[in-house]
Image: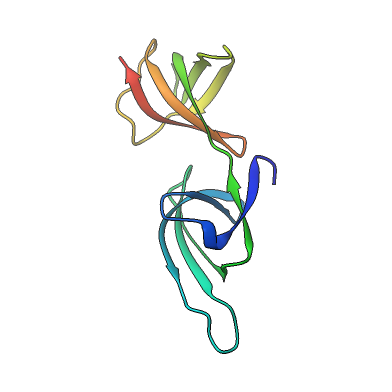
Length: 131
């Protein structure tokens, strides 16, 4: 999957990111079982989606590989608000993006500086930096 890198499941920790069923997620709970008589150690991950608040679970051997999304955190300035979309200009590259209006971020107006991230080709506003 583009925008990801493979890692071993056993090396992941709570708070890190993983792609489960092609959905980038943040790990919220993790349990490891000991190796048994007939097999290796298993790991059970519970994760929440980054873009949709969906709960995902994954179970597999600790030696198996999983994709981890490459997350790029950036700053941008709000140019305009068009219904459910926020038009943002990236402060480094000056590219213009249209990002869905977040539900969990305080009121956003034109001219504000916001922090957003990009993962697996999708964008999300995470917080307002300045008003």
